[in-house]
Image 1 (tube, rainbow, N blue to C red):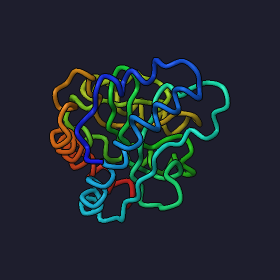
Image 2 (image 1 turned 90 degrees about the vertical axis):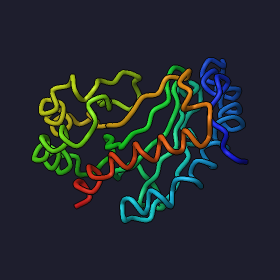
Image 3 (image 1 turned 60 degrees about the horizontal axis):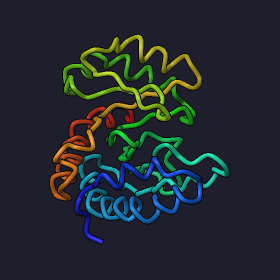
Length: 205
């Protein structure tokens, strides 16, 4: 399918009761859009980062009772999996879409990444737009604008707390017109990834 943007129906998926019913809606409504986005973005992201980028679409396979509160796709240089590596994400909760550069708790060497970012914290504040947001837990909705956060404290927590995470990027409201057009959203995601790529490269080096 060609990608034509996201609709309110996509976000309303997360109001559907029951694991089976919600998963069926995710598979029918959202995953084909993720596949189309992956086809549009993976080559350009590979060119930006200098790494081959493989698309991983969350399957939520471990869930047996509770339906997922969000769903996502990831772009990662590793073909087999993404959770143990720095990766880019696009995904939805019921009340926003997120575009992330993500460092989650499964990273085997979180301390290394945290130290790298602490050494470049001034560069991060200068190069990343202040209205980009930071999350410390990919399972929660809340995030704080870079301009409002104590970056050193956040990165120190990321380094020292086992479950702490570091995700940086954008939240987009479901009503935002950029989501209603496939081209507009692809352009927005590409621009966001382009602004995050220097940070990705710092961490990969």
